[in-house]
Figure 1 (tube, protein in one colour):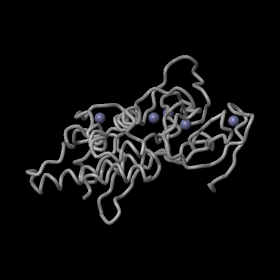
Figure 2 (figure 1 turned 90 degrees about the vertical axis):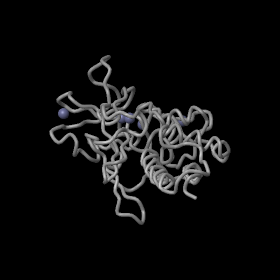
Figure 3 (figure 1 turned 45 degrees about the vertical axis):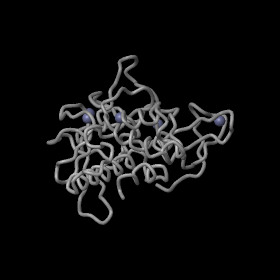
Length: 249
Ligand SMILES: [Zn+2]
Ligand SMILES: [Zn+2]
Ligand SMILES: [Zn+2]
Ligand SMILES: [Zn+2]
Ligand SMILES: [Zn+2]
């Protein structure tokens, strides 16, 4: 679908046209109430600030990929058609508070943004790929568990795993702590704290006596994290390059 530069969302925001842009700061989407970053549609009027994920503004009739829910027939809704019952996203395992895709059988629900997460992506200059999976064989880098609902990202050798739920929570925490601001993240200590929050057991303060094997292991974890955070945000941004350059040297 070609990118529309302007869009008029009649429900929710009938007053002004929304303009396609790349937000350099994280935002909370006024449609799904989830956080976002990068590509979005925003009202250009300063006092208004209405903003939507691209997926929440364009609203494809069904989610872009359905390999995990082959029997489902998803439809887009502005609010949960089932009323006050809390629905949980089957990709990130977090509550749904706004726009959603719901299966007509009422068995599965998805955040529009989660439904557009890349199912597979690869590392530049490498044959290692990262897949979205239902099951994981190694512990999640964040929660150290294999058991959490929703989907996970897994490296092709199966050694690095991360729940989508944990990834979204860790990114949100980093944002709340101010780590997604270029001036804050330019500071090495903050950079390290932000990375530690993403992978608490793996990222330790760099010490001189670390073996080269351990350093190589950390480097691969950092590259894995960088790709995951970029996937959540839609693209690698200056901010992310700055955040992750710490361990790449
Ligand atoms: Zn949204
Ligand atoms: Zn407006
Ligand atoms: Zn279904
Ligand atoms: Zn979700
Ligand atoms: Zn986890």
